[in-house]
Length: 53
Image 1: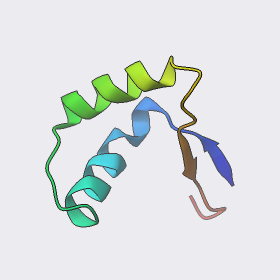
Image 2: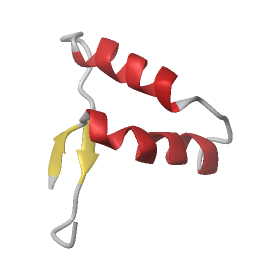
Image 3: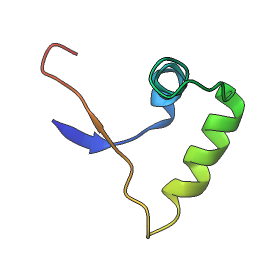
């Protein structure tokens, strides 16, 4: 199921940044960017959650 990203997703976002994209971005910086972009109506930040989660 698709859903809006939440502050609780910060660790997973950091893991994706490191493992899939190859760069380190701190949890604090990630949380700050997520909060900023979540307020911008030009951005849609979605995550996927399966039924097992």
